[in-house]
Length: 322
Image (cartoon, rainbow, N blue to C red; front, top):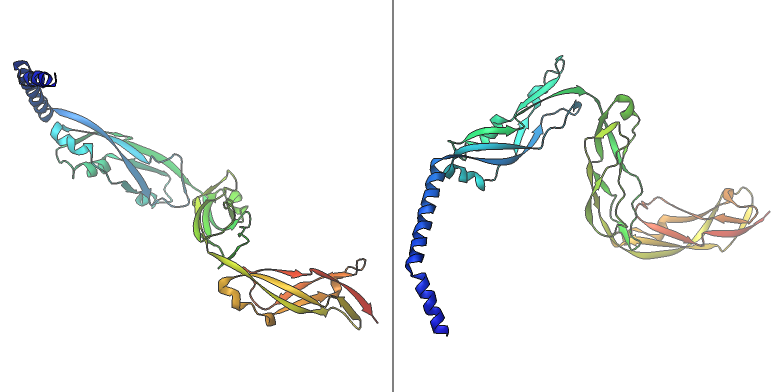
């Protein structure tokens, strides 16, 4: 049964009908190739566009297109080069059109066809650009006020309790340019960063959006980078005597007379925290006469930035003696 099947296949493959079909297929392919090579055809492609040279204080009355479509005409074999061609982004310098700021006719005009032709010629010198969409645009423009303002956090970033900041969080850029009517931008004191995602617990650079203050102000920078550097923390504690201040000729007895100061300090700063640099202070002028207590505070000449601490107890009782 199997032998007879393969015999049938061989007879069909080498039959006159199969040979005739292959000949017709070959002739059709040759005719199609001759038609393609010898006839004019068109292909449509799209290319990205960027612009520079627009002053910060200029406001256009329309949006510049970020891509354009063009059609190329040529013989089929030449057009095949455009099927898989990767085009560089067209960069258009508009600075020359804004140099005469005192001109009454405040408008710009862009003709895209010459830029497209510069892309096409290196690929095929015989191809013709028959259509560009948009072909040309003309926009009027006006001048607005600009001002540089600082960037701030709308909500203070929260560091995970098991970590401490190695240094101050960096915002890049820390100032941004805004523009609009003078009254609108003069009311803006700073631009706020959108909230950070969760607690900070690792070294990372976070891209964050900026919050637009109002509809009358335009942000020329939309996003900033937040550079965070943290490290694991460990505890370090000292028991210190409580120093009494703010008394004049009055003897004060404290209960207790010492306090424990507990620091949550980064590993790199562990040896920077020394008991001799700190004082636990009882300020008699801040006393609660009814409860006979005073809240303790920590004084130091050292840099406590990024170091969390607590005093136990937070407040002490007292009695006075004449």
